Length: 72
Image (cartoon, rainbow, N blue to C red; front, top):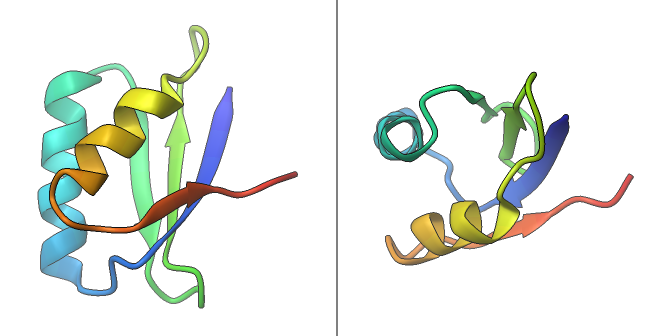
């Protein structure tokens, strides 16, 4: 399963910190940012099941960032 999120994370350092944080909680997820995209895309992939959107959103918003799932 793949989920894509719009964020306001625009700096490489910020995205690296978020990836480390998410990898600590979800070590089996593949996580990356596309900061070249106007929506500063966060892409999360889990090859073995569902993705816990709620926890991802909570972890990012507790660091003061904006995040919302993009619709298909």
